[in-house]
Each structure stands twice: as C-alpha cells, then as structure tokens.
Length: 78
Image 1: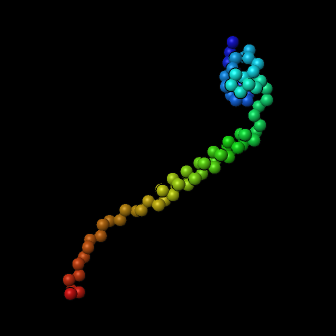
Image 2: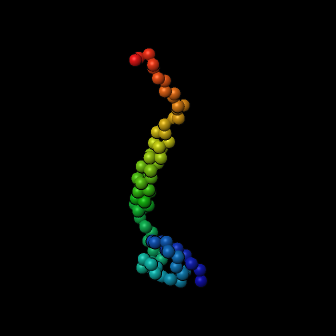
Image 3: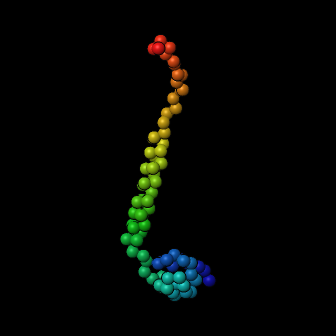
C-alpha cells in the first residue's frame, strides 16, 4: 500500500482509498481549476511588491555620511 496525493487538496491518501479523508472528493477525481492557481500567484505578487518597494526605498534613502563640520566663531562681528 502506497500513498498518493489527492488531486483536489494534495493530502496524501492510500492508493486503495476512493474518497479523500480531508476534502471528501474522489482522490483521482477532478483537479482544481486554473483560476485558483492564478489567483494564488496574483495574491503573492500583490503582497510582495509593496514589501520589495519598501526595502528598495530604504536602501535608496540612506543619507550619505558627511564629515563633521567644525564650528567657527566669528569674533569680529562684535
């Protein structure tokens, strides 16, 4: 007896099982529509773009280190 993934939910089931114990669909039955896969990819991109943009802006906005300027006192202005 071997294990094989369910085509609907991906849970491992016995090769002898006709119905998945997790999602209760036939283990060799229909596969998820492609719209779900595209929706998952779209959500991933939607949430990672702002994260990447924030990290990129932090690297760009780092101020360059300047040498400290000495304070000069003007005594002649009295």
